[in-house]
Amino acid sequence: MAYPMRTKRALLYAWLLATLFSGIPSTLYALLTGRDPLEATRAAGAMIAMPNSLAAAALVHVSVSLFWALVLWLLLPYRRTALWVMVASAAIAVLDLRVIAPALFPEVAALYFWPQFADHMMWGACYSVGLSLARPSATRP
Image 1 (cartoon, rainbow, N blue to C red):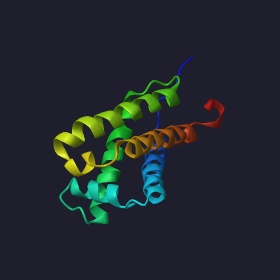
Image 2: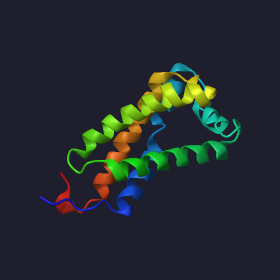
Image 3: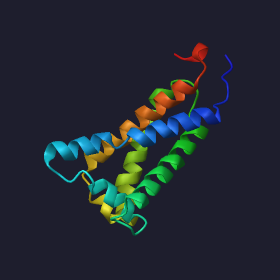
Image 4: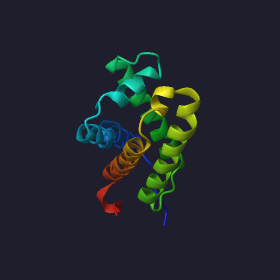
C-alpha cells in the first residue's frame, strides 16, 4: 500500500494544535497545587534573557514547538504514527528537560519534571490529532 506524502497543511494543523494546548497539564498542576501557573512561562522567556516577557515566552514556545513539529513531520513513519509521535514526545521530553535544559537553561531545569513531561506528552497527543485531522477522511484510521 502506498502512503501519500504528508502535506504542509498537516504540519500546520499538527503544530498549531500542539502549540496551543501543550501547556495545559503543567498549568493545571500549578493551579491545583497552589504554585505559580506562569512559572514555566517565565522559564521559557528566560531562555532568551527575558523572564518577565510574555511575548518572549510565546516566541520561544512557538519556535521550539515548530522545530520539533518539523523534525517529526519529516521523520515519522506513516504506519502507527500516533504511537511513534508519543514515543518521540517522551524522548524529546527527556532530551529537553534532562539534557538540554540543565546544560543551557537553568530556569527550565528548575521546573518540576513530571508536569513538564506531561506537557510534552500533551504536545505529542495534540500533534498526532493534528496530523490525523489533515488527512483525507478516506485515509483516516
